[in-house]
Image (cartoon, rainbow, N blue to C red; front, side, top):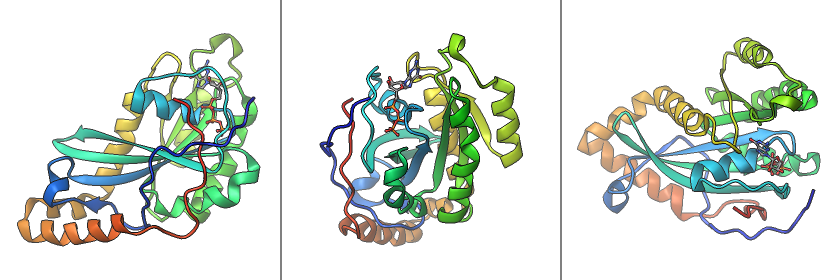
Length: 237
Ligand SMILES: Nc1nc2c(ncn2[C@@H]2O[C@H](COP(=O)(O)OP(=O)(O)OP(=O)(O)O)[C@@H](O)[C@H]2O)c(=O)[nH]1
């Protein structure tokens, strides 16, 4: 395991709040902006899931994320162009004070464990209680059992993942950042859930008056840096 100071490649800063709807020049690129968050124990593969989704890359070394990092990607769901800003958090305990500050800005959260680590699965309960405490009410959640390619090392059965997801009312996917299993599917599903949860606000996209109102919200959202700066991040993808 290697820990390095990160190079932050993107420097946008965002404020908490509802999903931002776009207008003007931005409207040509996307209709709505969402913030998603990846949480789970160190080493379960959060950074790799993100790199696979945004850049279709996989790296076999474990370079622990320091604090938080994010990447952006635009996808189209139900005819709506959605720009998703995905925050990758450090799983290491020592960064939890920082990472918890990012929960309140999320509209959707991936809770990730590693199917070859019973411990990371048991810890999902702890991550769920952190979400209950720090994330906004109504935040959408999905449970991910990553490293599904590691069948010989499996410690957590697929049914155990399904059972836990049922208990917490979440959708469940087994994924592999290594083989690209269910990556697009799980990111698209969480985006769909967020879209459904914010259906009312999104209906505003259909009327010009609401569209302009939404633009003002976006400008306010994008222009200002906030509190503790994005901590340094590690992504070598
Ligand atoms: N076999 C296999 N290995 C994976 C997969 N995803 C990640 N890994 C490996 O697991 C290790 C940890 O991956 P990371 O993405 O850095 O883990 P993380 O959850 O971001 O870790 P922290 O930043 O410390 O919280 C790396 O060696 C990855 O190559 C996967 O789907 N299959």
